[in-house]
Length: 135
Image (tube, rainbow, N blue to C red; front, side):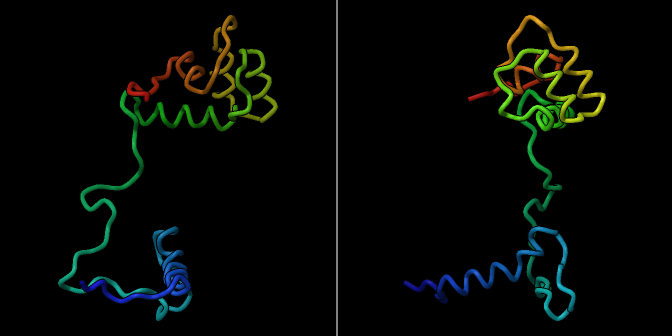
């Protein structure tokens, strides 16, 4: 059984670091052109993670891209450590963290007679959609 060329972990790390800028930035990060990796050959397909589409991330079933973005923005200013919390605590928290007016207004529209256990509870209470298939 032939397994191809073998090399050690040091060479693996070196090879990974040579293309790290390209994989993270999506473009060449070398100042000198001769250091750029060679493109695919004429008879070879272009390397692409999503050849028929743009790879941007998934949207869970039951949510729209706007729901994902809105919930993420809200979670940015509330954080994980705030729960469980009630409306007054969340209002104070987002104001202390200098959230934009739209986030503060969302939190002010929460019902005052309820305790929230996580960001999904908060997002659903302000009228947003959450995942329909939660495991």
